[in-house]
Image (tube, rainbow, N blue to C red; front, side, top):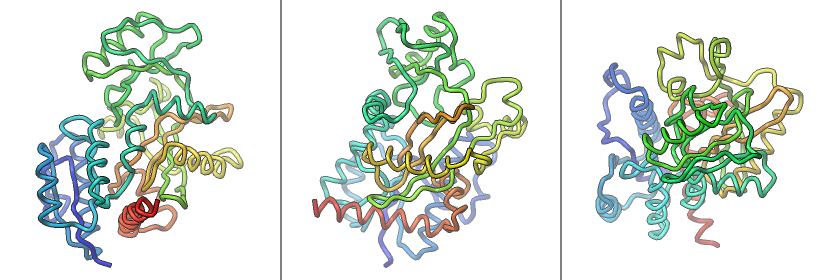
Length: 345
């Protein structure tokens, strides 16, 4: 059934005739966001849906007025932030829920947990899901490492995603470096900081899709290439967004090869359990670390991950034979069913 789809985007978006019309010399993170929005819009239109884009929202009246005037069947949510803050996005979704307006992806409650990393990790630890031990360092307070926390530690923001603020210096081995990196997060990102025990190992991404009946896609891996010889194998902002650096160091993303026997099924079961514990729906990507001795730790859950054609989520879906347009249609269908389930409850 053809639908009227309102696409909420981070960028004020003008649909070109082809993806090649975007300027080459632009910020890589901006370009990745732009390509995701372009790919989703292109797929929606090829499926025959009527679309309208509302990008760069700075006034909630614009959302209210567009919903009232155009009356979309569903909102396709591509927002990663609102008013410059990712933590505001769940509030907009809560507003849509109050209006009984269907939208794609995760509900407001699941997104809230994902954007509050300390609370999310406490919930997972309660359910005996392996996460690294951690400590939160609020802004304006001193930095003292608990005795139980062991170096090396990985320091990051309590709320930012997309490797924001992540660099080789994020892994610290002494109290002095810990204080320096925590102060960096406080000053540069203006958020609380958290330090968790650094897990050395393979970095695996697992896509999950569904509301109640869940499906996982094949595990994807960051292959760090020559980085393992010269520096720590972590997905820094440079690794994620600097294509020249990735090419120079031989960093690629692709299928996880040669997992230990039985690990495919184990990772799938664990991913579904995490997804359910956190109240996710729609689709998500879960980031794990697999150690040499076979221990698996959840590092980050990412509801509503990037779904451009060349992103990990879509490529791992394609590995199962799911075409990109079919993936986008499935995400739309899940958004409609999610509203129906809430109404029935």
